Length: 434
Figure (cartoon, rainbow, N blue to C red):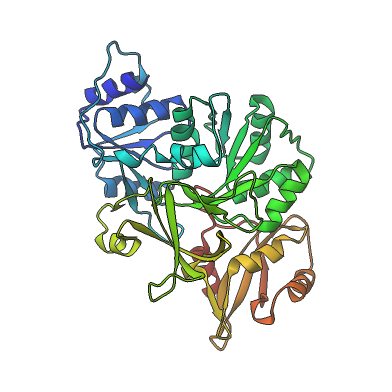
């Protein structure tokens, strides 16, 4: 199938070094097309099937793709006789591009090299997920997403494991049916999806995790209350970790024998991490820098952004972290941190308190100016059931210092998210300014 896709791409004029955009749902065809393009020396550029037309237009133009492959291009995968000899690429050649998820604005094309493409299997795959050939892997994160590409292709392919692919958009009831029918041993998901799965289970949806030996989370920090509720219900810890499209995969993670709720865990072998203060010195609290076997080399066509995010082999993540006893604790994005009453407030700390309330399904905290222009804490909450704001205010008063308590608690039907499920706080900040 891979060679048929490679030959099909050649027939359409694709040559070594050309970018090929894929707007494909999760299926064996996606994997065949991706590997086929790489085999002939082209550069696969997977794009979100959930993106808006204007977002796709931007990424297609920005990538300079010579060809776009969609689910309608079935002829690309017709059986073609003959084998394809791999192009003579080197370890320093570009292997694939992947767009960042756009939590802070327009996405950027992240460039990954051949020599680093398989490292997630050697790092997280070996030391955290511990994937073997008998495993059956199910990822709710899609293949177009950096997290999903490694979950459903790189790591299981390297281990000879089986993969469960779902072409449809994530829905908790559908995911629980897949888990019951296909019996995965490893579940990869993101915090918002774990919250939705848990809410469905608590609402009566059949939720059978008897086949699952490991639950893994990344994409954004897993709030401790959510992880504890999941563990309490299913007897399975969620192994939370931190990675990014720029890092290439998860570089810091909890493991099944070392789980600390509210922590991203410890550095995985093959990576290094630093917590850096504004002066560039190592500190107990500051910006997380990471380098290791899977990190990218920069952004396409964005020299200033590349200079800011990639420094001497380190990826400057933009995530604010505290390190203690070798464990890393996420405090939120650097640009999400709030300065309230001359004191710093971590949105994640406030969100964790609100999520401990039984009626709060999701929440996100941003800054909001009052009539005098002074910044305060504003919490947007998605509720399972009608709850007086005063009840949430009392909870915050019990658990948070005064300057950290939300001045505004706004119930909403849903939170704005990227196609990969990350909360777009910049949109909430825009709403708070309106």
